[in-house]
Length: 144
Image (tube, rainbow, N blue to C red):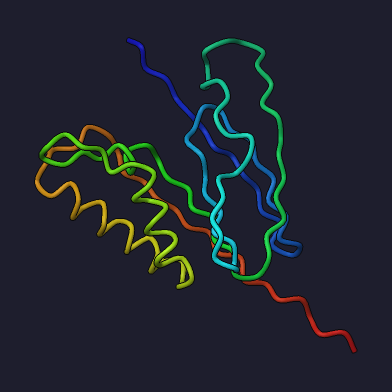
């Protein structure tokens, strides 16, 4: 049937802000740093799940700082099409993250979802549209 599954698996240590992750063929997660820069996490792509047996998915790590936002999404976001068959694309997604990423995580989710819906308008979609924003705002305690 030529169907496949991708996965982005991550674990955040809430005390330290260390994010460990592995990617099995999924689109890149974006990290909006507290200083406003946006970067795609390294180690993206890889082989989709179940394509071959015995595949090892390397673990990667990223250190978050207070105010960082991790944006995870399915390809239904970037592959949402409008009436002229144009895809929403990564550039529009990054622009929304840049413009609204300093706010609270729920607000960023809402802004991106509204942007995708406005772009697609009444065009039928063929894939799920799933979006999660993780915000890490831990501030180290003051030294006495």
